[in-house]
Every structure is written in structure tokens, then in C-alpha cells.
Amino acid sequence: MSHDNLSTSRPAGMPLPQTLYRGLYVRIAKKLGVDPSYVSRVARGERFSDPVESALRQEVHQISRKLGGRLPVPEDKPAHRGHKRLGLLVKRHRNSIRRDWLHHSQTDPGHRRLKLSAQKRTSPVLPLVDEALRSMKFTPKEMAQMNMKAATQHGRLRRAQGYTTTGLVEDYNLIRRCVSVLAEKNLNHLDAHLLLHDLSQLSEVFDIQLQHALRKFLARA
Image (cartoon, rainbow, N blue to C red):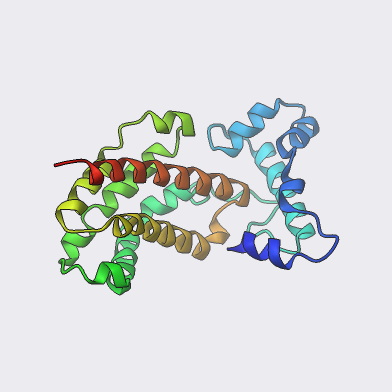
């Protein structure tokens, strides 16, 4: 939603975010004398380098200032590695995500019509989250080739429980919502450049999981 605000209320003369981010890894690579692919791997969490991470924070901080915002993590001190990745944050708050998801499901008009116990309603949620966390470490191409067992089971279960296709899709929308709120509440513990990448990866997994779930949901009995 913040991206929507930037696009609709951007003052005249303010550069577009994608323009400022373009060439980010190349600029840092030239500054530090390393290969851009190495900078990319550090940003994805595949490699660790305090100089590269510091340079990334400084660049994102400068871009954020140009866009009229502020970077939540101080630019001169690396965040603790135990806190800055979205995946670890989600893993540590699995139960709260399940609880918040249940609350949203019970208040959603489409979900509310289904007379299910809390246990039956939430049973596929954490397996989906866990599967997504395992899968987000891979590239989108690799994800597309993976066997999403939790998602397939989710489609089978929701069909048996009387869900509609809209309700099935909404399951994933509610998970995204819970993860987004969790990330927003913990911005001070997450690096901005890593968060953007992790949210993108997680969203990619949820899309692929939904495809698997829909195929099973729509398959003939």
C-alpha cells in the first residue's frame, strides 16, 4: 500500500522508486571492488558481509530520503543477524500468525458462513507457512518445479469442507495480511533491503502454493 501512496501522491519532480533502485548492486560493487553478483547474494542472505550490508543500508537510506521517507534501521550499525530476516521472524511468531489468521477468518463474510471449529479452520495454515518458509530460499524457477505437498493437501481439505474457490484464495490473502502486519510491527528489527527481497520471495511462494491448491481443489473426485 505504501507503494500505491508513492505513485498517487508523489510530488512533481520526485523520482520514481524503481529509477532510484535501478543499478543499486552495480553501484555498490564498484564502490567496494567486488562483483555485482556477490552483492546480490548478500542481499538475498546467501552470503554475509558487513561492508556490503552497510553499503546496502546506506544506499537504501539515501533512496528513502529522496523519496521523503526514513529507513527504520540505523545505517551505521548492522542489525543483529538473529532478527533481520523475515523468514526467521515469521518462524518465531507462527502461533501469533495462526491466532491472527483465525480472527480474520472468523470475521470474513465468506469464511464465516462455514460452520467449522477453530482447529479445522486453521489446520492447514501453519503447514502452508512452514512450506513457504522452506521454499522461499529457492529461485522462482526452482519453486515452480517443487512439489508443494501442504498446498495440495490444503486444496483437498478445503474442497471436502465445502469451501468455494474464492474462499480458498482468501486463505492465502489472509496469510499474506498476517505476515505483512507482523513485518510492519517489527520494522526496527528488519533490514529494508532484505525485507523487500524476502517479501517478494514469500509472495512468489504463496502464488505457487495457490496454483497447487487450486488444481487439487478443482480436480475431479
